[in-house]
Length: 203
Length: 186
Image 1 (cartoon, helix red, strand yellow):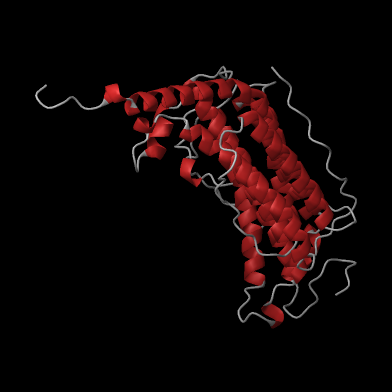
Image 2 (cartoon, rainbow over the protein chains, first blue to last red; image 1 turned 90 degrees about the horizontal axis):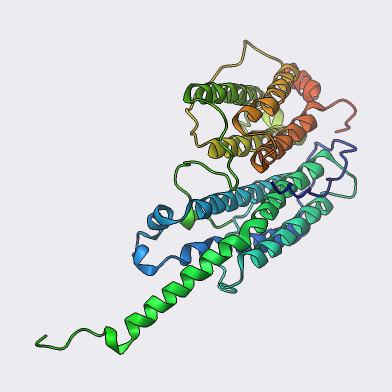
């Protein structure tokens, strides 16, 4: 059993600063941008796994159901934990927005780049971003340590610990994905080859 | 995170290194009940405090004595954070053990004060810290992850406990009385 990576300790809650901070759009903007980058990175990992299935298995309008029907237990677990970590990040984001008294914004965006980036590399990037978001959130909440800042940090720490756990297992899944993508490419190439053309009339 | 397009189906079972808990179906059912009762008790107390705050400051009209002071608005946000942390913790554990929330609920005992509710929540969180070990095998990442989620809820509670008595005083004070924590200047 691989031990869980230990998140950096949150700032000690030296005081309880319950009254809300004044709306702090500037500080929130920094936090939001980093969370958005982490979100996008993780969404890319989810979509890469889903997209690795042969097109025949995900006909138009049925992709979602088919992927869940056919993916391996390991992939299913991986995807669920990835989704769970995403929920933790979203929860931390909402917590920070509430504390900073700013309007929470949904951040999900498609990631058009780096589709072929390995899962491990993508998760590594996401971990770094989530850590950065955690520290930025603490900074945004003011110089004085507070329970709320510690709690925001703790939420991000749970998320990046989960992601680190997944990253340790990403290489194994990467092999599966690459194998499936290679098989897909070969199948598509065979479909495009002249020998795969429809038989001539009279046959 | 943009997970909508790949939202997983109802949980079957989940763990990267799943070690089946040595429980019979009956034992698992009992363990689940032992887990859910503290969970729903926490939510009942949270709802009770929410209800009292809402009754005291209904925000209609949205100003004057009915307008919730910022400090107690922040408290409700903290309470909401605790409820959300509990939801994430519960969802995670149920996902790991391959079960679904049966949707049971409980009521709080008659009329607890805010400090009593927060105390009760704290006790239930401590119960859950042990109870979750019955459902998730010791020494597994799943148990660690569940407990780290529970720790977030415990931290939220600690932040709220600091102001529990002040909130109770504010809730029972006449509507035009000062409703701020001790030591805080308006």
